[in-house]
Image (tube, rainbow, N blue to C red; front, side, top):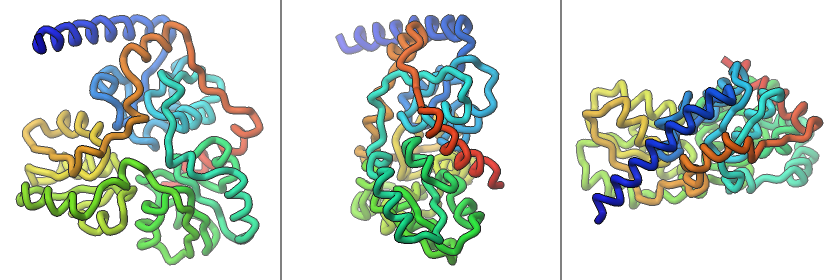
Length: 312
């Protein structure tokens, strides 16, 4: 019975993929998928990437319609950078708890306390927060962005774990907001120790959104894209992975003969996983839900995103 159910599911997925390909042509659409999406979503995507790469693709695409398979703030960033495009998100409930941990009123109050500080906002923030920001960053370029601002004092929002990591590479004073990624923050030193005992030949690769004491244990620390690149190029054949388990799709694509063990079964972002093939097909059929950002917010937020894209 289980084999029959799996076969039926595979057939349904094949039909949905064919329907999605047809709708993409009709709508002149592209599908952007974050590395944390379900495997079947990443499989149909025109571009897979982290927040930075997908922001770049949104800014330069010739497509009329962007289907953003990620969470809401990512769709907002795409709409801000491509205001004349229609941006769809398969499930508008796909939010980001970390992005929700910082609010405009709180940020404005902090700016008043530190009038000489520049605000650097992790891209994992709402459009409204970005509109109150001097420059955005991703985990891939966070250190370069902080170093690029013309102030010795930086207000950093919202991820305190990533902020703690960046702080080790700059002499600037960083005022850290008390936010964190619910998924990455679950990984503990005990989890890593248990996995290392089980897989003594494996290297531990870790995302800087994890807790500082966990990040300290990493053989390699980097953004999602950085982890993928490192694992692909490393002579090591076995890895303990300290980031969201959706990255397994690209890791296996890049290195089918290497072994990857996720550091805990809890490295799953439920918000990323709400998107599925049915919802992708439906949003292309109905051209909804659409991402909308008020023009005055978009204009201010766009400046902070464009400044990020200029940092080399």
